[in-house]
Image 1 (cartoon, one colour):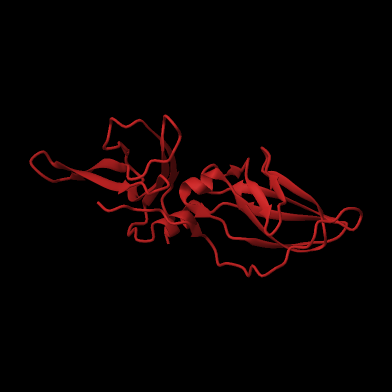
Image 2: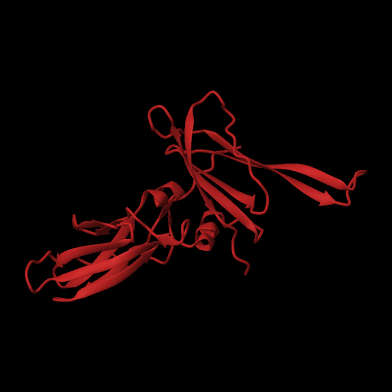
Amino acid sequence: MGRLTPPRLVLYAGLSLGIAAPAVAQGPGSGVLRGVVFDSLITSAPLEGAEIWIESTNLMAKSDAAGHFALTALAPGRYVLTFYHPMLDSAGLSMPPVVVDVVAGDSNNVALATPSPTQAHHLLCPQDPLRRTGTVVGVVHNAADGKPVAAATISAHWTTYDIGVGASGVGSAQRAVEAKSDATGHVLLCGLPTDVALVRPTVDPWECWSLIWLGVRSRAPT
């Protein structure tokens, strides 16, 4: 099977990025940007360890255990905000920029969030024909040195059963989906059922690999 590479996806319509970042200010004329980052994709909880950046500057804040962050001493004006987290990188996703306005002497609030399972599934696997399907994305690492492993074959296997088929009255069939990791170790499996147990072996058992998996739940009925 050919190599299947999970794309780097921006999840919403982009915003104009032709906005010059105001200079950082000190004193009473400056503003504060506070916010929270929420993980809608995996945990449905505040996201710790997200890096929030103001584009065209070296200003960065990191979210705490409650998902909170703060960027202080900002000159009044309009800023372009982005955020990064290793989980998004593992899923091959990138978040769209957010434009925020900072007012002098005020604390300005912004809410950031990862995509929902439905949004991520729709963009990662738009070809999935079934409503009740899911996807698994992951990164394959060499367990010895931590480097990504390219061209690793990853497969998911499951069994389907049909009542009233065959001499025994129950028919079964083995199903599988297979993909190869790309040059960065990312791998994407689409079209997986969400109502049966899955087994995900590698086809090269002599290799010592470490896998980081993110499972995306079934797409919501439409």
